Image 1 (spheres, rainbow, N blue to C red):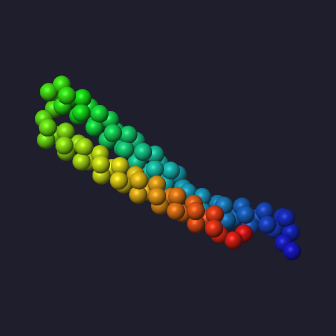
Image 2: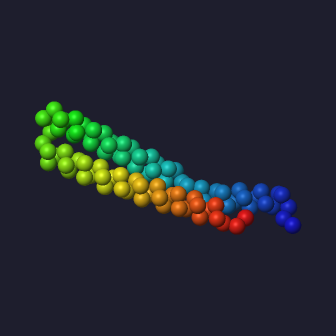
Image 3: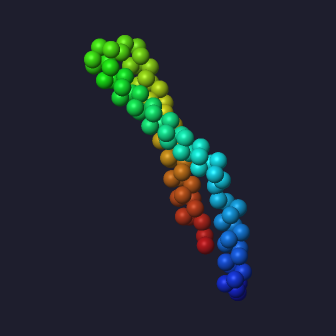
Length: 92
């Protein structure tokens, strides 16, 4: 049987080895801000197109870029959910 002190030490060592660094958290935060900025650009382009201030070509290009960004976000979300489900299936 493993003593509680040994188990706690092992847990602390494992936790710090898999803890994401500050760079990873910052990159995720930047990616979320970029995504929000892209969606804002779509809103502005759509509003501008309705007012006649933005060309149709620019609107289509902005929507296409937003679609690519959305597909990327969905793919990342799917990978995160898949990883979480894999962790739940691990034997304890």
